[in-house]
Length: 189
Length: 189
DNA sequence: TACAGTTTATACCGAACAGTACAGAGAATC
DNA sequence: GATTCTCTGTACTGTTCGGTATAAACTGTA
Image (cartoon, rainbow over all chains, first blue to last red; front, top):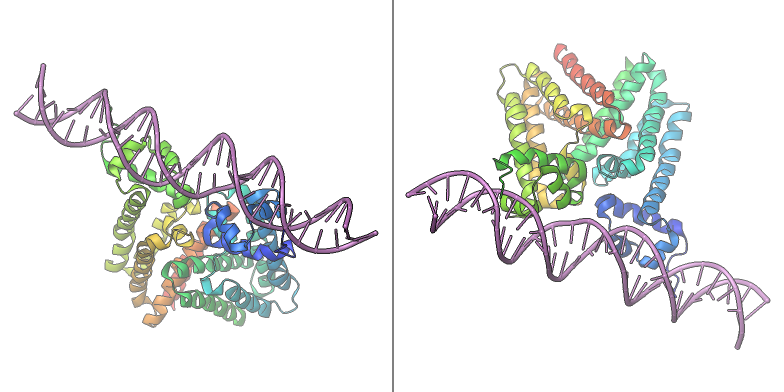
C-alpha cells in the first residue's frame, strides 16, 4: 500500500502535540491516527509497544531538544548570565507563551506519572541542575544558586498553568520577564 | 436498601480526591464507586448529571473553601502583610507540600478544560485579584501589586508541578518559603 | 517480470467506558 | 400494618478503548 511517512521521526512531533493536548490517557488511538494520518496498522508497525512506546519516543525527543537547546548552553557557556537570559527566551518561544503545555509537567500531575516517573524526574532534575550550575558564579552560595534555580523552573511551570487557566499569554510573558529581570538585579548587587 | 451516606456533602471530598488523582477523564465511574463506596445507582441518584455534575460540585466546594479561607482574609484583613503570610501557610497545608495536586490547575492543563473553563478562570482570577489587593498597600504601584500577585500564584502552581515531578515535598516548602520571605524584604524597603 | 521486504487498511477481539432502567430494600409517616 | 419516599444493587445499553491478526498493496532490486 501507499507509503505515507518517510521517516518515523517525522511523526513524533505530531504525536507530541496530541499528547500535549489530551494527555496520555486522553490521547486515544483514533485521535492519534487522525492527527498523524496513519492507521492502526502503521502505528503499530512503527511503535510495536503501542501507546507507551509512542510516549517514550516523544519524551526522548523532548529530552534531546532540551538537552541541546537549554541544558548544554547553561552548563558550558562562558557567560552564564547571558546563557540564562537565552534560556528564558528559548523557553518562551518553546511554550508559545504558555499556550503550549509542558508535556513532562502535565505527565507528572496525571495518574500515568508512575509509568514515566524516571523520565519526568530526570527532565526536571537536569533542568534545575543546569540552571543552578549557571547561577553558581552569580550567587553567594551553592545553596542560593540551587534555590534560585528551583524557583525559576517552578515559576516557568506555574506560568504555563496560570496562562492556560486564564487564557492569557501575556501573563506568561510577564512572569518570565520579571524572573529574568530579577536575575539581572541580583547580578548587580 | 441500606443507607450508606447521610449527606451528599460528605462524599464530595472523596470525589475531589479521585479527580485529583486521576483527572476528569481518568476518574472512571468504577474508581469513583470504589472510592466513595457507592454503587452507580446511588451516584446517579445524588448526581443525575453524571460525572460532569460531580466535577462541578467538587469545583464549587473547592471554590467555597478558597473563598472563605484564602480570598476573603486577603481582601478584608486590616494587616495585609500578615494575611499574605497566612495565605502561604494555608496553601502549604492545603496542598500537603505539593503532594496534593491543585485540581483546578490540573483541569486547566487537561483536554476537558473547555468544559469547566469558567470555573477555572474564575478561581485563578479571584486568587490573583485577592492577593493583588492585599499587596497594594505594600507596593509602589497597582501594577507592581498585580505583577507580584501573578508571580506568587504561578510560583505556587509551579511548585506543585516540580515537587510532584521530583517527588520532593521539601522543594515545595523551599519555593514557598522563598516567595514569602521576598514579600517580607519588599516590605522593609 | 518476478520476487522479497516493507508498509498499509481493515476486520476483529475482549475489556472497559458512561449512562439507563428498574425492582426492591430501608426508613419514616400515618 | 400499609403507604410513601429515599436510597441502592444489578443487569443492561451502545460505544469506545488498546491491541492483534492478516492479507493486500506498494517499493526496490534483480
